[in-house]
Structure formats: C-alpha cells, structure tokens
Image (cartoon, rainbow, N blue to C red; front, side, top):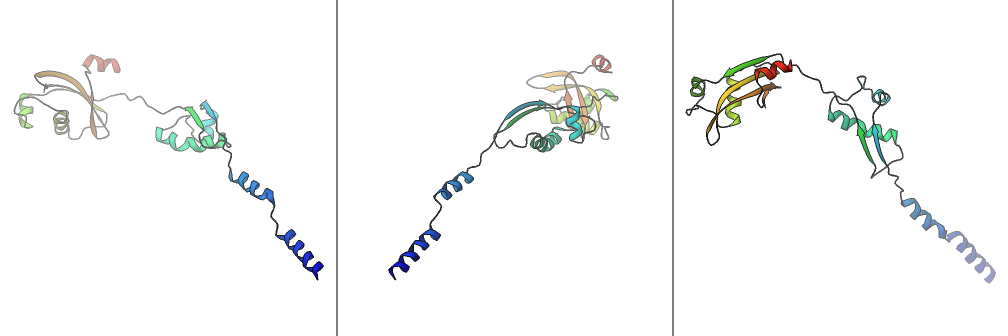
Length: 184
C-alpha cells in the first residue's frame, strides 16, 4: 500500500508541477518592444500619387494633417511611439489677382451719418462697420483704398486698403493706386 501511495504522490507532483520558465516567458511577452525612428522626407510625385492627390499638393494644412499619419504608418510600418518625421510637402496656395478696386475718401457727411460726431474713426470696428454700410453687397476680393481720419491720441489722415474676403474685411496697410497698378 505504501508503494501505491508513493507512486500516486509522485505522479501527482509530475502532473501538477509548474514550468519554472513559464513565468519568465509571460514577463517577456508582456514587455512590448517599440521601435522608433526619425526621418526627414520631402514628398515626391509618386508619394502624392499614393495619396490620391492628382495635383501634386495638399489643398490645406488640415488635409495634410489628416492624410500624412496613415501615409507615414504605411511607409514606416515597424515604427511606433516616439517616432518623429519632418515632412516637407506642397500646399495649394493660389495667387489671387485683385480685379476690383474702389478708391474712396470718407467725407464729413459719412462720419455724421454713421454716428461719428467728432468727424473721425477711433477703432477698427468703426471702419469695418462703415465699409459694411458703404458696400453692403461687396463682391468677394473687393479691394477698397480708403482715405479716412483716425483718432489715436490725435487725429491723423490715413490711407489703407481693405480687402473683402469671405464675408469680412481685412486691412492691408498702405496700398496706393500706384502699388495696386504694379500688382496687376
């Protein structure tokens, strides 16, 4: 009976003993090795084709931000966290030819009609409010060369350009008729 008991005990130990390397293997599997790298690249025509950009450029910076991560993941598939890529790319930036120019000098009546009893403007919003009233249906990219009086400690007569772009006026300092003609 003793032999049967010892045999059973030895067999139990054999079947229930653990693999001492199992814990080590589990620790090794738990450690993920991350490969990182750095690259400086300039996109080529082939890269733009791979991105389905037929014109060889991005339409906006937002397009580049959304498309480049996947492109870089495909180009460097083993790179993981802490990788860095400096990418030079072409951005569509059309040159606009200003074809519409208005030259206007603000009159004393203009100031009075718009509630400026001192005969001048004193803030940029005064000017844009006046332009909105003067040009209520301004065409996109209308350039107004505006001569006006402006109060900032003292009254000065200024001439600045105001460009109507996508529904708002943007100031372009000091565009004269000669400079406008030189621009085409």
